[in-house]
Image (cartoon, rainbow, N blue to C red; front, side, top):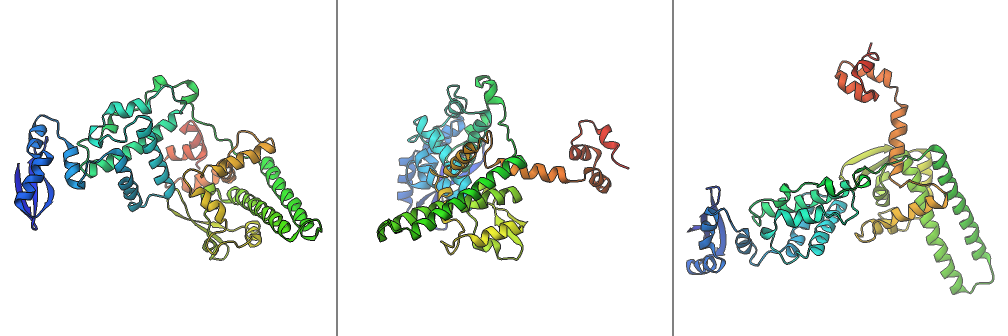
Length: 389
């Protein structure tokens, strides 16, 4: 181990287990103080540990951060790192929730990233007592791998322990292995849902009018009652617009809740930056959606639905809207549907509306037979070949 002065700051130079040389800043400009830091941190033993195949990143982490790095302390920098890389608020929240749940349930908050082994991760991911599905476990594993990639980039771990972990299918039941079925809304179900929402809004308008004209309320009582009814009407307006919007465009619930007035700045268009992927998409604005937009009360200078926008922005409350929608469907005896089912309905309708024979002919010069087979939904390429003339 040697001390090397770079730009006035002393760095500890040592050889890693792979034989490459590494420089770690002591953050000291005085040689005596730098030697004291090296001694206190145990850098002198670092090369010996590397030669033995036991390179300690916890020591490195102490020098880089000035304190002992733990999983609990790493959450904040990890969140900031994802934000700096353009991850959506939803992605950041989901990754953070997974990380905190893992550390809490396994009592690892005070552990250093370098002390985490494959067993610490596999024991949680493949816990047979948990009712989590295979897909849920896979998503959680992806979140932890992202976290340890961040730790590796900062030198807090010598190797990523999560890469050695996989899903143990032997601990999963048949139902846990089966992917959840997404059933699209049928046209009849969609009509029943929108008709119900319109009827509720009409009934509420009559109730608001009755309170406004009624003589049985005091001024204060009338104001309180109208505020309550106004909030209910705003919620109904949101759901009516959300259902119609998703049924037309396939937008996610979180994207609709976060719509801004600026999304309608171009005539005849709905322009959205999607919350999940941060991608810009455009949709034609149908007359029905345009009419619904003009009927919305303006309660915010930026967002169409400030209350719902605040809900999806709250990590602990963002599922509330999905719960409300399921309850709405239950009142109409519509089972096995979620708001996401509207996206499936749009995709199915658009797919079936395509003249696949004509499309296959038009694309035959640019698509392979395998691609055409997939496009048409055939299982045998010989069948698809008969559609190309």
